[in-house]
Structures are given as C-alpha cells and as structure tokens.
Image (cartoon, rainbow, N blue to C red; front, side, top):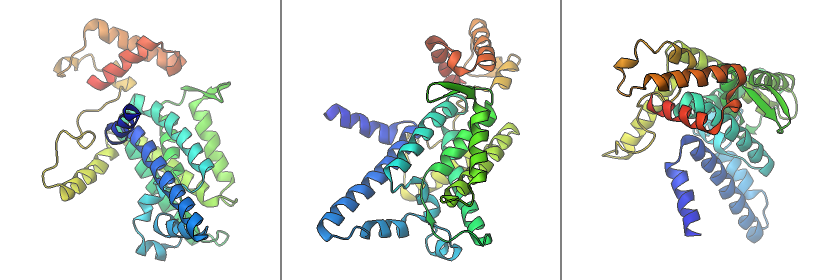
Length: 309
C-alpha cells in the first residue's frame, strides 16, 4: 500500500504535465465531493458546498462578477461538480494529450490546455454579454482545454487514424471537425456555455499551431509567467525542478527531420547515419499509415530520438 501512495505522490508532483493535470482535476473533484458529502450529512444543507464552490471556483458569465473573482478564469478549468462530467473530460484529455505529447512535447500540451481554457472562458463571457438569448450563469470544466489539445493534434497530424470505441477508424481531422460542428449546432442548447467554450479552445488551437509553424512558441510565455511566480514564492528557486525551464524542444517534426541532414553535425547529440535512416523510415511510415502502425520498438526509438533532439 505504501508503494502505491508513493507512486501516486511521485506522479502527482514529479510526473509529466499530462499526469499532473489529471491528478489536479481529480483531486479538486474529490475534495468538492467529499466536503459536500460530509457537510450535507451533518448540516442537512445539500446546497451549502455547491453554492460556495460555484461562487469561489466557477467562471461567471457576468463580466462585473468576474472583476471581483478574476481567479475563476483559471480555477474553472480544473473544477467539476459531476462524476460524468469529469469522467468524460479526463478520458478525452488523456488520449488526446498522450497523442499530442508524442509529437509536440509536454510543454506545448500544457500550454494548449491553459491557453485553450482561457480562450474558452473569454469567448464564453463575450458571447453571454452580447447574446440576448443566453441566460447568465457560471461554468466549470476542463473541456475548453481538452478541446484545444484535441484540435491542435488534428491540425498537426490530420491524417492520423483514430478508433472510436475501438471499432470505427477515422482520420483525426474528421473527429475534430465533427466535434466542432456539433458545438456550432448546440450554441443555444442546454449546455450553450460549454459548447461556446469548446469553440474558444478550438480557435486557440488553430492560432497556436499556426504560430508554432511560423516559429513563434506560445508556451514560452506561459513558462516565463510560471518562472516569475516561482521566483516570487521561493527566494532560491531550484533549477533542477522538473518542468519550469525551457530547455530544448521535445518533439520530432517531420519536415524538420527531413531537412536536418545538413545541420545535424552542429547538434550536441548526433545520430549515426543508420539511426537517421531508421528515423526517416519511421516518419514515412507514420505519414502513410499513422502512428498506430508502429511496433513497440519503433515507438521506443521515436520517443528516444524526440527526447534527445
């Protein structure tokens, strides 16, 4: 049992960013659920904790209320009040985040989650302020951030095959396009705020990938803020702490690898001619058949190269 808790502790504080996002969302949900259960049991008031959490953690659609609760633009994307809500969001986050990290690295995945959540929240507030048919309320959930990750993956590797329920195989871009269309069709439905936030995350993903291809890395700005906050909280921030320094890119970009033969000699970590040929073969296979077509050894080799590049 102690090994289990040690592993959970390690993953929660020193795991990759995807694992930490999953743990943080689940921890907030468990804290809310357990506090609500015990408070309701001893007070008889089933609305005490939900109302308090809604005021403290949820993002209000009213801009005036937001002025007095600016932190909710961040906290809402880690908060869930229903089991079905968090279960679906974490499933999408896990699979889309895992796939994106294979190609773009964990820092870009985290940046997409945060920026997507912020973009979804901002669009939610703007649309509720402008539309006469949308009633004021509040919003929680990670879906804007997870949508940003999913759409970014589809934009970067559109022909990647994905399986729905392990049965139907479609292209990644088809899945993302279908979800965006559903959000557009449901902007005035029961969960209008959620669908609007999804669209905000999708818009962020588009500009994120576009800027990345043009050489502008949005994740740099996020980690500059993180480093600044750490500098304020800790007088002597440790340089060895995982995840708070920029370092080198941790992804393999197909176009860059194809044109890297002339510059590979300048890199500190050099691949042999055989390794480079093997890498090109793997990337060609991904382009033609998708990532799932790789065997275990090919995936391990690709992961090693992505970490060293």
